[in-house]
Length: 313
Image 1: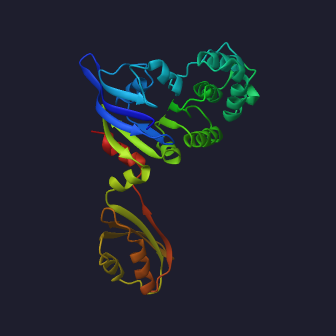
Image 2: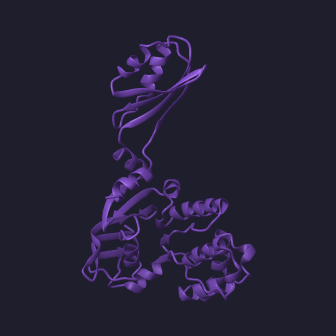
Image 3: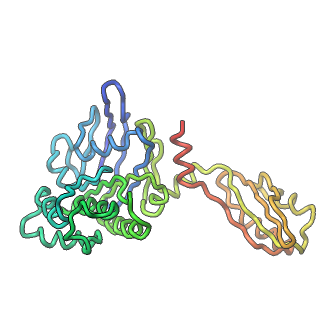
Protein backbone atom coordinates (compact mmCIF):
# COMPACT_ATOMS: atom_id res chain seq x y z
CA UNK A 1 0.00 0.00 0.00
CA UNK A 2 1.53 3.30 -1.09
CA UNK A 3 -0.86 5.86 0.42
CA UNK A 4 -3.36 5.14 3.17
CA UNK A 5 -5.76 7.82 4.44
CA UNK A 6 -7.84 6.91 7.49
CA UNK A 7 -10.73 8.96 8.92
CA UNK A 8 -9.10 12.21 7.84
CA UNK A 9 -10.66 15.47 9.07
CA UNK A 10 -9.43 19.04 8.83
CA UNK A 11 -11.04 22.09 10.42
CA UNK A 12 -10.30 25.73 9.66
CA UNK A 13 -11.70 27.35 12.78
CA UNK A 14 -15.20 25.90 13.06
CA UNK A 15 -15.40 25.02 9.36
CA UNK A 16 -14.73 21.38 8.37
CA UNK A 17 -12.82 21.51 5.06
CA UNK A 18 -12.40 17.70 5.03
CA UNK A 19 -14.86 15.39 6.81
CA UNK A 20 -13.74 11.93 7.93
CA UNK A 21 -12.52 10.63 4.55
CA UNK A 22 -10.69 7.34 3.97
CA UNK A 23 -9.07 5.82 0.89
CA UNK A 24 -6.06 3.76 -0.17
CA UNK A 25 -3.89 4.06 -3.27
CA UNK A 26 -1.59 1.31 -4.54
CA UNK A 27 1.79 1.63 -6.21
CA UNK A 28 1.33 1.85 -9.97
CA UNK A 29 -2.07 3.55 -9.78
CA UNK A 30 -2.73 6.87 -11.50
CA UNK A 31 -5.57 8.45 -9.55
CA UNK A 32 -7.50 11.49 -10.72
CA UNK A 33 -8.52 13.60 -7.72
CA UNK A 34 -11.47 15.78 -8.70
CA UNK A 35 -13.63 18.31 -6.96
CA UNK A 36 -15.05 21.81 -7.38
CA UNK A 37 -13.29 24.80 -5.85
CA UNK A 38 -13.56 24.67 -2.06
CA UNK A 39 -14.38 20.94 -1.97
CA UNK A 40 -11.34 20.00 0.14
CA UNK A 41 -9.13 18.72 -2.67
CA UNK A 42 -6.14 21.00 -2.10
CA UNK A 43 -6.43 20.64 1.67
CA UNK A 44 -6.25 16.85 1.35
CA UNK A 45 -3.20 17.01 -0.92
CA UNK A 46 -1.45 19.43 1.45
CA UNK A 47 -2.05 17.03 4.35
CA UNK A 48 -0.62 14.12 2.37
CA UNK A 49 2.46 16.19 1.54
CA UNK A 50 2.80 17.30 5.24
CA UNK A 51 2.20 20.99 4.46
CA UNK A 52 -0.84 20.80 6.77
CA UNK A 53 -1.49 18.74 9.90
CA UNK A 54 -4.82 16.88 10.13
CA UNK A 55 -7.26 17.80 12.89
CA UNK A 56 -8.13 14.09 13.14
CA UNK A 57 -7.18 10.90 11.36
CA UNK A 58 -3.99 9.36 9.98
CA UNK A 59 -2.04 9.36 6.72
CA UNK A 60 0.76 6.97 5.82
CA UNK A 61 2.98 7.20 2.73
CA UNK A 62 5.01 4.11 1.86
CA UNK A 63 4.40 2.90 5.44
CA UNK A 64 5.56 6.16 7.06
CA UNK A 65 3.22 8.27 9.20
CA UNK A 66 3.01 11.89 8.05
CA UNK A 67 2.93 13.25 11.62
CA UNK A 68 5.60 11.05 13.16
CA UNK A 69 7.97 10.84 10.16
CA UNK A 70 7.36 14.00 8.08
CA UNK A 71 10.95 14.26 6.76
CA UNK A 72 10.88 10.68 5.49
CA UNK A 73 7.48 11.27 3.87
CA UNK A 74 8.67 14.47 2.14
CA UNK A 75 11.65 12.63 0.70
CA UNK A 76 9.30 10.09 -0.88
CA UNK A 77 6.97 12.65 -2.47
CA UNK A 78 7.34 14.89 -5.50
CA UNK A 79 4.80 17.72 -5.43
CA UNK A 80 3.82 20.17 -8.15
CA UNK A 81 1.41 22.72 -6.63
CA UNK A 82 -1.03 24.69 -8.75
CA UNK A 83 1.04 27.85 -8.22
CA UNK A 84 4.37 26.76 -9.70
CA UNK A 85 7.22 27.69 -7.26
CA UNK A 86 9.94 28.96 -9.59
CA UNK A 87 12.83 31.41 -9.28
CA UNK A 88 12.43 33.40 -12.48
CA UNK A 89 15.94 34.93 -12.40
CA UNK A 90 17.67 31.51 -12.40
CA UNK A 91 18.38 29.53 -15.53
CA UNK A 92 16.77 26.11 -15.89
CA UNK A 93 19.89 24.03 -15.17
CA UNK A 94 20.88 26.04 -12.11
CA UNK A 95 17.35 25.89 -10.72
CA UNK A 96 17.07 22.11 -11.17
CA UNK A 97 20.53 21.64 -9.65
CA UNK A 98 19.40 23.74 -6.69
CA UNK A 99 16.19 21.66 -6.41
CA UNK A 100 18.26 18.46 -6.48
CA UNK A 101 20.40 19.71 -3.56
CA UNK A 102 17.27 20.67 -1.60
CA UNK A 103 15.96 17.15 -2.15
CA UNK A 104 19.27 15.67 -0.89
CA UNK A 105 20.21 14.02 -4.17
CA UNK A 106 23.78 12.72 -3.63
CA UNK A 107 26.38 15.02 -5.20
CA UNK A 108 27.74 12.29 -7.48
CA UNK A 109 24.21 11.57 -8.84
CA UNK A 110 23.09 15.14 -9.56
CA UNK A 111 24.50 15.21 -13.11
CA UNK A 112 22.73 12.00 -14.17
CA UNK A 113 19.52 13.16 -12.46
CA UNK A 114 19.63 16.42 -14.43
CA UNK A 115 20.22 14.61 -17.73
CA UNK A 116 17.33 12.24 -17.03
CA UNK A 117 14.81 14.89 -16.04
CA UNK A 118 15.71 17.33 -18.83
CA UNK A 119 15.16 14.57 -21.39
CA UNK A 120 11.92 13.32 -19.79
CA UNK A 121 10.40 16.80 -19.54
CA UNK A 122 11.58 18.04 -22.95
CA UNK A 123 13.73 20.88 -21.63
CA UNK A 124 16.91 20.41 -23.66
CA UNK A 125 16.27 23.42 -25.95
CA UNK A 126 15.75 25.82 -23.03
CA UNK A 127 18.07 24.44 -20.33
CA UNK A 128 20.45 27.41 -20.54
CA UNK A 129 17.69 30.05 -20.55
CA UNK A 130 16.45 32.04 -17.57
CA UNK A 131 13.09 30.74 -16.32
CA UNK A 132 11.64 34.24 -16.57
CA UNK A 133 12.19 34.14 -20.36
CA UNK A 134 10.19 30.93 -20.80
CA UNK A 135 6.60 30.54 -21.95
CA UNK A 136 4.02 29.37 -19.43
CA UNK A 137 4.14 25.90 -20.95
CA UNK A 138 7.89 25.58 -20.49
CA UNK A 139 7.66 26.96 -16.95
CA UNK A 140 5.14 24.21 -16.20
CA UNK A 141 7.63 21.64 -17.50
CA UNK A 142 10.34 23.07 -15.24
CA UNK A 143 7.96 22.78 -12.28
CA UNK A 144 7.25 19.16 -13.17
CA UNK A 145 10.99 18.52 -13.47
CA UNK A 146 11.68 19.90 -9.96
CA UNK A 147 8.96 17.62 -8.56
CA UNK A 148 10.64 14.59 -10.16
CA UNK A 149 14.33 15.45 -9.76
CA UNK A 150 14.85 13.14 -6.75
CA UNK A 151 12.98 10.22 -8.38
CA UNK A 152 10.27 10.04 -5.68
CA UNK A 153 8.00 7.05 -5.03
CA UNK A 154 4.89 9.24 -5.01
CA UNK A 155 4.01 12.12 -7.35
CA UNK A 156 1.25 14.60 -6.55
CA UNK A 157 0.55 16.90 -9.48
CA UNK A 158 -1.91 19.79 -9.26
CA UNK A 159 -2.99 20.88 -12.77
CA UNK A 160 0.24 19.64 -14.45
CA UNK A 161 -0.81 20.49 -18.03
CA UNK A 162 -2.03 24.01 -17.29
CA UNK A 163 -0.89 26.40 -20.02
CA UNK A 164 0.52 23.75 -22.36
CA UNK A 165 -0.27 23.59 -26.06
CA UNK A 166 -1.97 20.43 -27.46
CA UNK A 167 1.31 18.76 -28.48
CA UNK A 168 2.88 19.45 -25.08
CA UNK A 169 -0.22 18.12 -23.32
CA UNK A 170 0.09 14.82 -25.19
CA UNK A 171 3.80 14.60 -24.28
CA UNK A 172 3.15 15.26 -20.57
CA UNK A 173 0.25 12.78 -20.55
CA UNK A 174 2.50 10.11 -22.06
CA UNK A 175 5.15 10.92 -19.44
CA UNK A 176 2.55 10.61 -16.66
CA UNK A 177 1.46 7.22 -18.03
CA UNK A 178 5.07 5.98 -18.06
CA UNK A 179 5.69 7.23 -14.52
CA UNK A 180 2.46 5.64 -13.31
CA UNK A 181 3.77 2.17 -14.13
CA UNK A 182 6.40 2.47 -11.39
CA UNK A 183 5.08 5.13 -9.01
CA UNK A 184 1.99 6.19 -7.15
CA UNK A 185 0.54 9.22 -8.89
CA UNK A 186 -2.23 11.58 -7.81
CA UNK A 187 -3.37 13.95 -10.54
CA UNK A 188 -5.59 16.90 -9.74
CA UNK A 189 -7.15 18.55 -12.77
CA UNK A 190 -10.28 20.28 -14.01
CA UNK A 191 -9.81 18.81 -17.50
CA UNK A 192 -12.04 15.73 -17.35
CA UNK A 193 -10.86 14.45 -20.75
CA UNK A 194 -7.39 14.32 -19.21
CA UNK A 195 -8.66 12.05 -16.43
CA UNK A 196 -10.23 9.70 -18.97
CA UNK A 197 -7.03 9.69 -21.05
CA UNK A 198 -4.59 9.09 -18.20
CA UNK A 199 -6.16 7.83 -14.97
CA UNK A 200 -6.85 4.27 -13.80
CA UNK A 201 -9.10 5.49 -11.01
CA UNK A 202 -11.10 8.56 -10.03
CA UNK A 203 -11.78 10.04 -6.59
CA UNK A 204 -14.39 12.81 -6.49
CA UNK A 205 -14.61 14.99 -3.38
CA UNK A 206 -17.43 17.43 -2.66
CA UNK A 207 -18.02 19.53 0.46
CA UNK A 208 -15.21 17.69 2.21
CA UNK A 209 -16.53 14.17 1.55
CA UNK A 210 -15.60 11.47 -0.97
CA UNK A 211 -18.68 11.06 -3.17
CA UNK A 212 -17.30 8.68 -5.81
CA UNK A 213 -14.40 6.22 -6.11
CA UNK A 214 -13.77 3.90 -9.04
CA UNK A 215 -12.37 3.55 -12.54
CA UNK A 216 -13.81 5.88 -15.22
CA UNK A 217 -15.68 2.89 -16.74
CA UNK A 218 -17.08 1.81 -13.37
CA UNK A 219 -18.34 5.31 -12.60
CA UNK A 220 -19.91 5.66 -16.04
CA UNK A 221 -21.83 2.40 -15.55
CA UNK A 222 -22.83 3.23 -11.97
CA UNK A 223 -24.17 6.69 -12.72
CA UNK A 224 -25.59 6.02 -16.15
CA UNK A 225 -29.18 7.14 -16.57
CA UNK A 226 -31.42 6.29 -19.50
CA UNK A 227 -29.49 5.14 -22.56
CA UNK A 228 -29.74 7.26 -25.71
CA UNK A 229 -29.29 5.48 -29.04
CA UNK A 230 -28.97 7.32 -32.36
CA UNK A 231 -30.26 5.43 -35.41
CA UNK A 232 -30.16 6.38 -39.10
CA UNK A 233 -31.66 4.12 -41.78
CA UNK A 234 -31.85 4.38 -45.55
CA UNK A 235 -35.31 4.85 -47.01
CA UNK A 236 -36.70 1.75 -48.70
CA UNK A 237 -37.14 -1.87 -47.74
CA UNK A 238 -39.97 -2.55 -45.29
CA UNK A 239 -39.91 0.92 -43.77
CA UNK A 240 -43.55 1.56 -42.96
CA UNK A 241 -45.79 2.90 -40.22
CA UNK A 242 -45.28 -0.23 -38.13
CA UNK A 243 -41.48 0.17 -38.00
CA UNK A 244 -41.44 2.41 -34.94
CA UNK A 245 -43.87 0.22 -33.00
CA UNK A 246 -41.81 -2.87 -33.83
CA UNK A 247 -38.62 -1.20 -32.56
CA UNK A 248 -40.49 -0.17 -29.41
CA UNK A 249 -41.58 -3.79 -28.89
CA UNK A 250 -37.94 -4.76 -28.19
CA UNK A 251 -37.68 -5.35 -24.41
CA UNK A 252 -35.90 -2.39 -22.78
CA UNK A 253 -36.88 0.19 -25.43
CA UNK A 254 -38.87 2.96 -23.75
CA UNK A 255 -39.35 5.47 -26.54
CA UNK A 256 -38.48 6.00 -30.21
CA UNK A 257 -38.78 9.38 -31.91
CA UNK A 258 -38.12 10.42 -35.50
CA UNK A 259 -35.90 13.53 -35.39
CA UNK A 260 -35.32 14.25 -39.09
CA UNK A 261 -35.99 13.04 -42.60
CA UNK A 262 -34.69 13.76 -46.09
CA UNK A 263 -35.08 12.11 -49.46
CA UNK A 264 -32.51 9.40 -48.67
CA UNK A 265 -32.69 8.65 -44.94
CA UNK A 266 -34.55 8.80 -41.63
CA UNK A 267 -33.00 9.60 -38.26
CA UNK A 268 -34.32 8.38 -34.93
CA UNK A 269 -33.51 8.81 -31.26
CA UNK A 270 -34.25 5.84 -29.02
CA UNK A 271 -34.43 5.88 -25.22
CA UNK A 272 -33.65 2.58 -23.51
CA UNK A 273 -33.63 1.48 -19.88
CA UNK A 274 -30.67 2.22 -17.61
CA UNK A 275 -27.66 -0.05 -18.07
CA UNK A 276 -28.97 -1.69 -21.26
CA UNK A 277 -27.20 -2.21 -24.59
CA UNK A 278 -29.80 -2.98 -27.24
CA UNK A 279 -27.79 -2.24 -30.37
CA UNK A 280 -27.63 -5.91 -31.43
CA UNK A 281 -31.40 -6.35 -31.01
CA UNK A 282 -32.04 -3.20 -33.06
CA UNK A 283 -29.61 -4.36 -35.75
CA UNK A 284 -31.34 -7.76 -35.99
CA UNK A 285 -34.72 -6.04 -36.37
CA UNK A 286 -33.32 -3.94 -39.24
CA UNK A 287 -32.02 -7.07 -40.98
CA UNK A 288 -35.40 -8.72 -40.53
CA UNK A 289 -37.07 -5.73 -42.17
CA UNK A 290 -34.49 -5.60 -44.98
CA UNK A 291 -33.47 -2.07 -44.03
CA UNK A 292 -30.05 -0.56 -44.72
CA UNK A 293 -28.34 0.69 -41.57
CA UNK A 294 -26.40 3.93 -42.02
CA UNK A 295 -25.66 4.79 -38.39
CA UNK A 296 -26.18 3.18 -35.00
CA UNK A 297 -24.41 4.35 -31.86
CA UNK A 298 -25.07 4.61 -28.17
CA UNK A 299 -24.19 7.71 -26.17
CA UNK A 300 -22.58 7.07 -22.79
CA UNK A 301 -22.60 9.10 -19.62
CA UNK A 302 -19.44 11.22 -19.56
CA UNK A 303 -17.26 11.98 -16.56
CA UNK A 304 -18.41 15.57 -16.93
CA UNK A 305 -22.05 14.45 -16.50
CA UNK A 306 -21.11 12.43 -13.40
CA UNK A 307 -19.05 15.28 -11.95
CA UNK A 308 -21.94 17.71 -12.36
CA UNK A 309 -24.46 15.26 -10.90
CA UNK A 310 -22.34 14.70 -7.80
CA UNK A 311 -21.13 18.23 -7.14
CA UNK A 312 -24.00 20.56 -8.09
CA UNK A 313 -25.96 19.96 -4.90
